[in-house]
Image 1 (tube, rainbow, N blue to C red):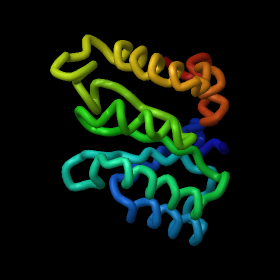
Image 2 (cartoon, rainbow, N blue to C red):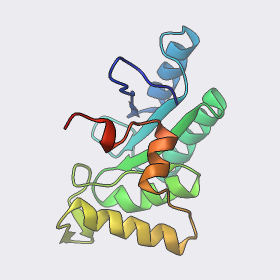
Image 3 (spheres, rainbow, N blue to C red):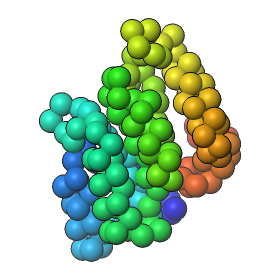
Length: 153
């Protein structure tokens, strides 16, 4: 993935609805933005696409058709939908996102103590499914981010 901007920043394209995927393709066709893209499917947020497996599969399929190999896909889901939806994203070859920003829970009725608790949970799930987990260095390479050694804080 290429760097953008003088500081090496990269865009994350959050898609709250299928139309956002098609808008991204429209801007790419007009050469306003250039691939490869990092698409974050956002599910279960009020006013956006619902957190149903069919919606995630449809969004991923549309991105596959529109962008081929020129994108990375990741999913997040709000609240109780977080773990099932991101597990499906991984099964479809995508990435996952967890964190207290999206869900406060670590299980049914049990508040998470930290983001790390949610990360550990999805890691256990994916390892049980024999899904390979990228190291931090591999993830930075896949996303073409510069890493903590190249930032000014």
